[in-house]
Image 1 (cartoon, one colour):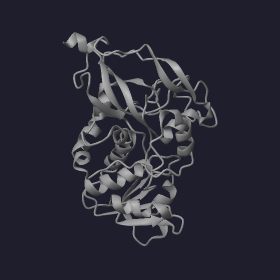
Image 2 (cartoon, rainbow, N blue to C red):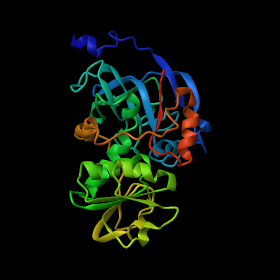
Image 3 (tube, rainbow, N blue to C red):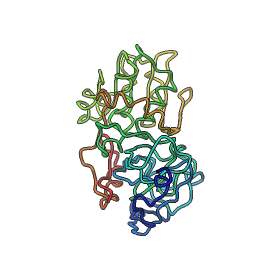
Image 4 (cartoon, rainbow, N blue to C red):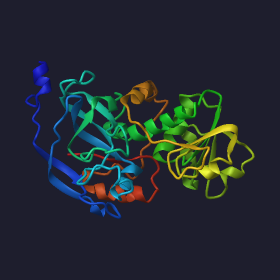
Length: 326
């Protein structure tokens, strides 16, 4: 039986598949082209091959496409996409956690900016190391699961970096974005924050409250740094660490995911691991922590360019997902 699982004979896997590809860096998603003949990746012994069901887009995807980190990128042609949810169709010889038929999800790239995979999740098939994946929580759809990995892992790792714990207060800058929506929920429902404040534009304030924000701040009408109240932690998901430092208590901490960074704020880039997703599983299965999907989606595979163009406007409320992938 093991031999059948390890071979592709038990499931019919084509040699080529449909994918979105860019062959050069560009100024917009217009560099993306549909290609029906991209080779299906060969898996290494620690990898699984995934039949992709849904993929979500992240700012890192279009920043990569624009060539923002080409010095550390793997060279084009590139199939973009970090986040994936799908079904295992083949396993490498050293894989022990998953078998053919398992429904999995994860962020494909362990190091986001260090030679990320040339074949990402915007394809019918993609390969990933066992260690970056987790079993999909049964109560989540593939669309919901695909929306989570990079954003929720980033949210969690940032809270860990500042040693966030029960009883502390937190201000989240960019509360309506992919990472911010999860920082609010994790701080409140997993870490036990005493108070969660978050910034967003006028129309997005009510959704923040529904996620667990005690104080929703309209950044179009007030400056968060002018509030008399200061916070134990400020989690900056928008790139305002200089202002964030004015909103933190003496001895408090600022963590940011968008540079440039003003010390003593700290910046980090996610190390993707399925271990975080496994830790979060009880909170996802109980419904305490929920995926947040942008209402314009999901976008069908044929509308991937439009999905990217929308993401680039910075107007998304929650995650932009591409589904179904044929």
